[in-house]
View 1: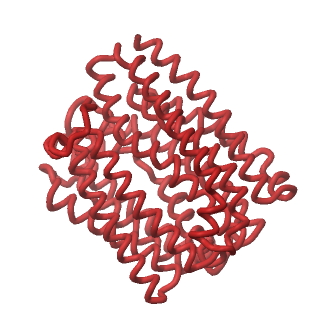
View 2 (view 1 turned 135 degrees about the horizontal axis):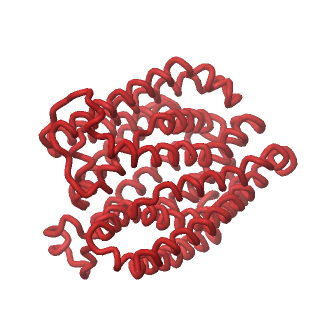
Length: 417
């Protein structure tokens, strides 16, 4: 693990330096955050809520067909043979076609299910995204496995830049909510082109998926976790949209994204570094797992806690000055979700360790517990307390999940010691 002093020339020469992950985080999440805020300000709560429904629908359908191949490739001790890479690619491509078809065919039904029929057209546009994302060359996955964070950072930053400028240009041209999705399509198309031009590996396309059965067994737990994760991430939004309407949904969705951008997205970026690093450590020197995990969890707790406190204090200023007066009702929701995202940041470290050490089932069990806590009282909470009540319910579910995962993760490091 490269954790040396930050020096520009050292960073440029070292593909696996953690600084590349930080650069990617600043570029990608920064551009996404500006795009998100710009779109929210121009569109307003109700029209921005339409975009939220399309994004939520895409996330739900994608999770139902998640193969877990990327995580399995990173965790696997051996590299992919050309025939195995070809089997992975055809499986992913089939996944993309299934997701795109499902979204396009059921767009009207999904929009009515959310209680916002006007979002059907946007859902159909969102169906383009899984086709592009799942056609990416498997060589792109190996960049993570080999800890080539420099290549990942540069390609993701370029993709985010194209997404940002395309979306803002379309928004300024008056194209409305569809601008956000078309920007995403542009950025994903750049990633696809780079994967086939710069990061390709020997590949023999085939349908012999038995060749990657070991990846499939590991990926099965990732698939289960993905379904549960998307239910957890989208259930509260679905309930708000269904029972409180597009304006309340726009406020809740925006509050959630602001808290996520400020806190938990940093943890997700750290997970991009931690997962392959911990996987290599598990495969080569398990005894170091205990010390490394403790240190990573402590650092994430301090950093994300500080960011959470800062965002809670400055929420009125950020909302009033950036989004405008029509978003003032989002302030109390943002404050509650900041603490929830602090929990989520620490959970991300546990998830990276558990998956890297070959225990993805623990992540699945934790998600089941969290989902149970979230669903059971949701109808009563949303009717009695509205969006504030739902925010507190998410806070409670994440807190319970964090306690369980930390206990299981610490048990795991004791076994590695």
